[in-house]
Amino acid sequence: MLTVKTRIAPSPTGDPHVGTAYIALFNRCFAHQHGGKFLLRIEDTDQKRSTPKSEMEILTALNWLGLTWDEGVGVGGDNGPYRQSERAEIYRQHADILLKKELAFPCFCSAQRLEKVRQAQISEKRTPRYDGHCLSLGHTERQSRMQSGEPYVIRLVIPQQGECHFIDWLRGKVTISWAQVDMQVLMKSDGLPTYHFANVVDDHLMGITHVIRGEEWINSVPKHVLLYQYFDWKTPEFCHMPLLRNPDKSKLSKRKNPTSINYYRDMGYLPEAMVNYLGLMGWSMPNGVEKFALSEMSDAFDIKRVSLGGPIFDGEKLDWLNGKYLREDLSDKEFASRYLQWANNDNRLGQIAPLIQPRVEKFSDVIGLAGQFLDGIVPVDATRFEHAKLSTDQIIRILQFSLWRLEGLQTWNRELIEDALLDLSERMNLKIRDFLFPLFISISGSAVSTSILDNVSILGLDLSRARIRHSIELLGGISKKLAKTLEKEFRAL
Ligand code: GLU
Image (cartoon, rainbow, N blue to C red; front, side, top):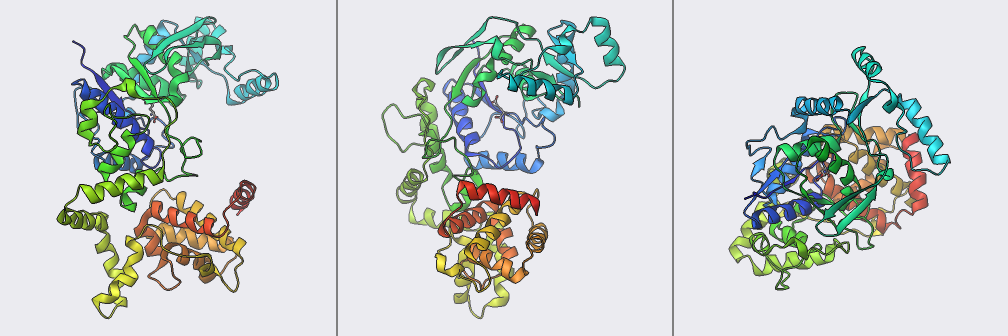
């Protein structure tokens, strides 16, 4: 009998996203409900955007949520390595197979030529796609140009006409015309594969039977199906989950909603409540209860119960559910110990002690200085931002520009935060004291506090971002038009 195997395949290019946890949850439940296995693979072929920090944070966040995996990075298994950057040779060999069968072809087109073709297609109102230029090169020319060291990519041969049909478990039969499918690059000129190629090769070699992922990938299925056919491999089942949405129905994005799992951890949500909440995204228990444990969801899981209307990730409902967990599931003792565990996550109390100790005369003075580190959004009102030299517009600028600088940091530490903010204040032609004032109020709630650089570095990006955003809203917010102007100004600094 076929053993069910599913996977989550995150690209480590940013914060650990709630969407990754959501898809991981459904994959894990599906596999376990069928007595199968759930695998984790890291898709880090985009060398410029992938970072070890992001990988580590994704793995930590999934573990924190209890969304552990049975095979893959950190756990091992028979089908490793599980990091795509360590599998380059495997992809190269597979690309060679397709080249030999002439189901893929080398493309020598320069970036300039491709851009010209694209522009021409756009002006003729056609969908931009590769025009097949290198498809017509003869075998001998291909070979000699490849051997001469000329840079090339490898592209997929696509049927010239007809349609691709496949079954999506939630949608039934899906039909996409081949005319809409591009001659996808499989291998880049740096010798690394693209997502599509590595993903299919790995899903096959790792024995994945069911591909459950976000619906943004549904239009890619024809390319994938074609690859399975070209290799003569069994195609897995496909199931594309509805995307999480903001309360205004737009696609969940960090512009409108915190999307990092770290934010929810730092705000003090319980992992079990988070997982339960994600389980309510487009799914419901057969008995209709809204509060359930991961094991209960796994046992009762039925993928056919997923509804396609875009599930709304709504902070208020999450608060309600988290509150229920805090009140109903924890004894007094557990409440106290879980609180302390949260307060001291990442040795937070140890980190703030050296800042506070030199400033107090007795222990009862501590909470006034330490409160900001154990708070979500610090209580402030707009009048606190009034400043003799800075207008509200300037304050909004300082806050937004600082946030963009902080978001751009590759590594989070005090020195880099200091460098970034000092540099920004100089570029904005502001005295550091004046420049830091709005940040003090926003982050710490007061102009008298421990060093703002320490505060930001200990609080982390997610809480700092939430506070800065909250302050900007308090001060009147940033309209779409203003956002554009600010982006321009920021880039010109
Ligand atoms: N690496 C892809 C992502 O980050 C995986 C998509 C898939 O599951 O096929 O979304």
